Image (cartoon, rainbow, N blue to C red; front, side, top):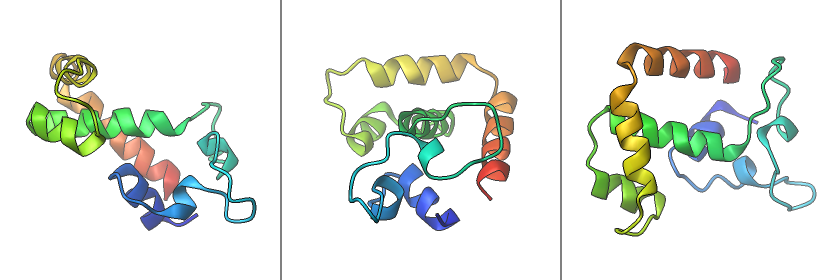
Length: 106
């Protein structure tokens, strides 16, 4: 799995290899099926989705833009929950988590 494919997946792209096993054509159940990062944490793709929404919220992207980007309806409260959680969490913690994640996947 290449870094650019993971980046596309994180950004909502459509990299097929980031979502599907090329041999079987079936979706990956979790990231652990893709790569062994040598860490004891179990990672599932939905965590990346929430992380990406968190980063957008931290960068002050509007709620409506985030909703459209991830395909949530306007009445969805999930994005607001994530947005407000991020605003309460310190910027340093988010930046450090993204640095750690980038180091794991590079």
